[in-house]
Image 1: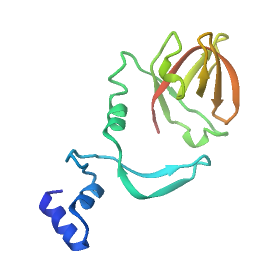
Image 2: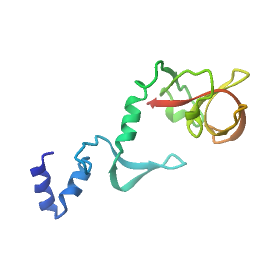
Image 3: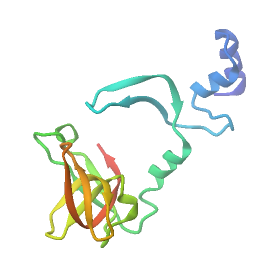
Length: 159
């Protein structure tokens, strides 16, 4: 959108040019924001529209874009769920970076977690101790203790 187009729209609707530009995805500094935040998803999976769409911060966009470039090796896991809480994500692909320890970035994040018995789960790590004891929230919402051997945050999920 050109500035004169924004000015014409602003004059037509009686709004400031900055508002027109904001809704067009242009930030105040003039840097284009290609993604608008238009809704939230609540704990029941219901989508609720925001009254005012907002440009997604460039830091979030850059993090998603650079997630794969920032690590030397990326692995993928495909979700195959015909029932249960992950049914809606059946066939989605989860990207993550392999690790031999507990990555500090995994604390508080959705992560691929492995215990000393070799069992691996997709969970959010609420807290973890240096000795490996951790409190995780599983996909079905249950909170449990888990002895972490390794943990790596999910880089992205491709539907």
